[in-house]
Length: 563
Image 1: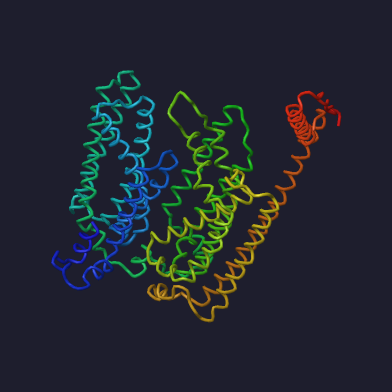
Image 2: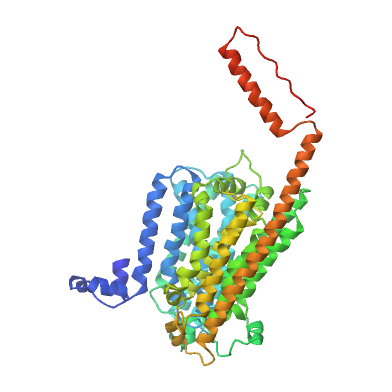
């Protein structure tokens, strides 16, 4: 695919590869060879690790690599071209990930059935549930992608429209398979022969859907031919109005990626809380509020006018950056999502491994222990600012919607890891003592101040100047925007960290009170852990002495139980 895309996207025959520096020129001339290079690397990682890993958690790395591998060619394809491509890209990402996961599992089940082995009833039920959710997501995103690609034209006025209709036919067949299997299962009529036939039909439908999807990448859709402004080329939409407070408050543009993620995260959290309370267990209301508010902040700064103007205005970008990196993670880690899911789910040894088992295995995973290494988290949290903005990466990334979204995800993850170590409700794989947490936060504070000061005293050197010059927006003042962004980075970094120090002090005080209360209760029972350990040590020494001198009388050790 690397070689074929090099030739196809540039319109050259194979013979050009025999001349001079054609390879390097053709490779650099298009984004597609680079995307397929990522896919190649991901495929090699997946192949190698899948052959050598011995535990379930070992497959998480090839899973992560596979996500990048399947997204790379899609991210630079049709969904990144034309007006409204920010909607198209976000919808495409969800569709690609969900369909690969769900359809891939169905194909694996088909291979299993073809080899003469049955699918366990528990796994079959999970397969039906997964496919049901996948079809809902696929149909929703397909509707959005249809609106985006047709760009106002009729469904049957273009080849793309006919392709979309054909894909819809195969999705309809999948829905029919799912409905038939569910009805037979409810009526207790689902037998081995039915499962085999249904999986076979589902495999044919999936193959047709995938084939048409691949064919769609070879034909330009109608949105390619819509007149497009410079702002729409880079952003997908117009930003003619100056970003006044009123504009930022009223000019909302949904960020599909974070909006869907936030809705799913809040729904799962509230459903878990409801499950816990139906069992008669309590869950603190403050944690619920913190989790919901965290996602409100994320959706607010990415879908409001702040999110819309975060690309064309550096100062507003810094507001979004600091909100995703400093404010939202503080609220999310106070929600304790991992603890909630562990308490809600339960392990059942009579069934295949479920959510509870997977979470426990992930928490014991060596790679996760490395990721939560305080030194690694600190470097990731601090160096993200300097490495991104002072290396030229920011200027390159701002030209693409996928790269802008990737930056936002990075900010959120880095902040979550940092604050998860300091004030998180969930116990991290490498917990820090309270004094270590305090030092951790204090050590990070100067770096934000230095970063903000550098931005404010840059002496006219504009970060990502070429990108902003391309946009050439009449209301833009690059120097003032960068100065404002430096002030946001300074204040936005110091204030949340001060809030964290206060929260950490409260948690420290509460923990000390709990420890003192527990020790008092221990004293009330007439026992003390330290004295018990001392007595156990004396008993061990006595046993050793008795074994060494069997003829001597064994000393008698009195336990003072009233101490």
